[in-house]
Amino acid sequence: MPQSRFPRRIGTWPAVGLTVAVLVVANLVMHRWSGPIGVLTAVVVSALLLGVLRWAGGTRADAGLAPGTLARGARWALALAGVVAVVYLAGALLPPTRTLFEDRRYEGMSAGGLLLRVLVTVPVGTVLVEEVAFRGVLYGLVDRARGAVWATTVSSLLFGLWHVLPSLHLATAKPALTAVFGDSAVGAGLAVAGAVLFTAAAGVLFCELRRRSGSLLAPMGLHWAVNAFGYVAGFLLR
Image (cartoon, rainbow, N blue to C red; front, side):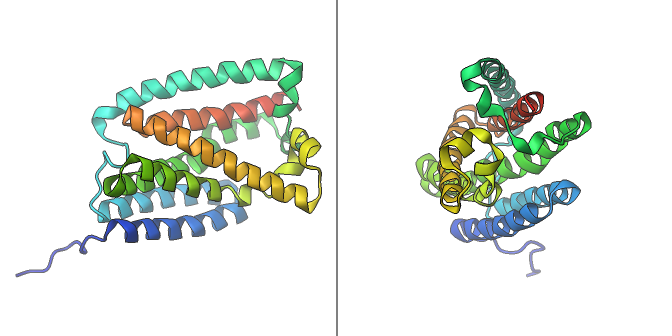
């Protein structure tokens, strides 16, 4: 009997372990090198993780990318982006909440740099890889084995830990957080812990959007809007 061209499928938990290993390497690379290398890494990692899901016997539906759900997911994405735009606009205009959007990292940014972040870096370098990894592959793998509650828990906890490195200088970058945590090492650690908890909680919301819509596009739309409109607000309030 001739050998199959495809390797034998791996189990769910080995696939989860392989996914986590790939994400650890990707996190280190993307923290060390931003710009084009970071974006390219995001694309490669997204494709690689979808390959891991398929190797474990997963389908496009498991990743939230079934063709029949894309239109509904796009409608969810547009509606959620509209809500975020209204909330951010109100928050940036009202004096009590305006400082929440101020960020020293935007002080030297040009309009072209802003467009690059909003249209390339955020949707490809951040949203694509994070949604494919956490709400697509990890969620899909664990959901098949243990159900939505386990999938949400595993995905969200790992999503929170994914943000440890990006949060290392958060306390000093945002004036509103500096006022709370200060600029000491202890304050920086507390800010990182807060960011991990916050993003883990956001991961629960993203997973629920994925579950309810049946499409990865819904959390992708909200994720892009939160990040991209945050850049716009921070840029305008420099």
